[in-house]
Amino acid sequence: MNQKGKVYLVGAGVGDIGYLTLRAKELIASAEVLIYDALVDRQLLDLAPSDCLKLDVGKRGGKVSTPQAKINQLVVAYCLQGKQVVRLKSGDPLIFGRAIDEILALQAVDCDFELVPGISSVLAAPLLANIPLTDRELSTCFAVFSGHQPDLLNWQALAAIDTLVILMGTRTLSEIITRLLEAGKDPNEPIVIIRNCSQIEQEIFSGTLTDIVNITKGLSLSPAVIVIGKVVAYSDRIKQSSSLPLTHKKILVTRAAEQSSKFSTLLQQQGAIAIEMPALVITSPSSWLDLDNAISEIESFQWLILTSANGVNYFIERLQTLGKDIRALGRVKIAVVGKKTAATLAKYHLKPDFIPPNFVADSLVETFPEILSRKKILFPRVETGGREILVKELTAKGAKLVEIAAYQSRCPDKIDSNIWQKLQQKQIDVVTFASSKTVSNFVKLIEQELTPDGNIQDILTGVAIASIGPQTTKTCYELLHRVDIEATEYTLEGLTDAIIQYFSD
Image (tube, rainbow, N blue to C red):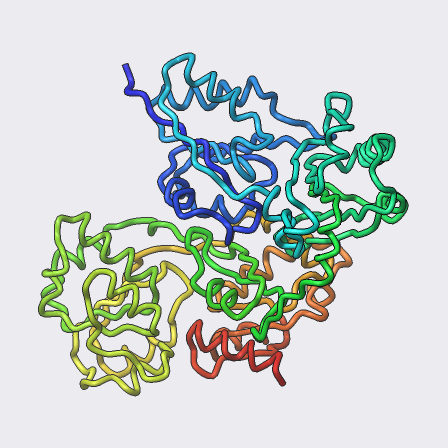
């Protein structure tokens, strides 16, 4: 009989990945099965292992939904198979979710489970709209309720409470207001509707109980949090000052699907809203044979050249898979390109012997610290389409170069629908590229979505194109016919600085 697994009922937070708890991030990163809701930020799914089974069981009003009984069956079935299951629920798992149903189903078959709290939109949405739920003078208490079934609520009691927070109330807004007015609520009581809190699309609609229905007539409001009470006046009075240079700038970060983005963090620290778009899928090479053969005779090489974090990771992990460790590299000098590659190497307690001064692979040859003639050099690289100029120049200098596929990269099958929508609706200020391959894959993904008479130039009208360096810039000009921003230091930090400079000019 299989050993039972464990189910973690995890709060995914308010929406933006930045508000995810560290415990939730840790559990998602080790999940074998991820069962998630509709309002969960899709960037959270990228935190899961590549072989994790991901199941969308989201429920949205008016759309086909997974029945709760089916969700109960899924969490139980995978737990009984011995899997580590993360049941990812928007907000907090015990606030207007159906977590109790799932817990009872797990208990019925003696499945182990753990509850992990998350930040609920009940608390986050008012805060992100500059509204305090309590105030010494205006709000000594607040109540939270669902607007889903108005007939079940005590409207006399609710009308007497200073501040009301309502979830799932946009479809019954008119009835909610009518009930509150009938129960004696002031018609001039302020009300605010916070739609898509923490997201790029966050919108705030303000009014009073008298006019809010007309103000929002014909608008799509869901998902939203509704706040009613005098504290709503603080929304305009509290102005969060910010001197960060990229505040509110929406920047699209093209990256590998399996990798979290240090670049996004750098941009967010400058106030930007970073939107990550998987534009590369990194996988093992089609065959390990050549790399295994090279590793078996690693001591015969004088130099090891690594030009990417992926190259470092795949090479070292393969070294370890073959029963060796970093001691096997004791007599081999290591050259790397870029700070990121060096930092990745440091994770394995290795320090490079040489880094080109301007972090460009193609300048490695002209600044190489030794005569290259007859030097035996191992170059683990991407399987196709990488560093051809470097290979040509090393060979021309007489180096005995052994280039081997350590990993391969391919284009994702399809662009994320939310990102495509943002591009169409002109909700992106900058699109960034840190390699030529992300440029070509980005173009391919966009062209798949275009109508026969569509044009990628139209999609990118008003969007600045940012490149990390000359080779990437060259590809941008070939495929997109322009570059608006180029880093002078060819690193992620350098690209961040160049974007800041662009907006400060």
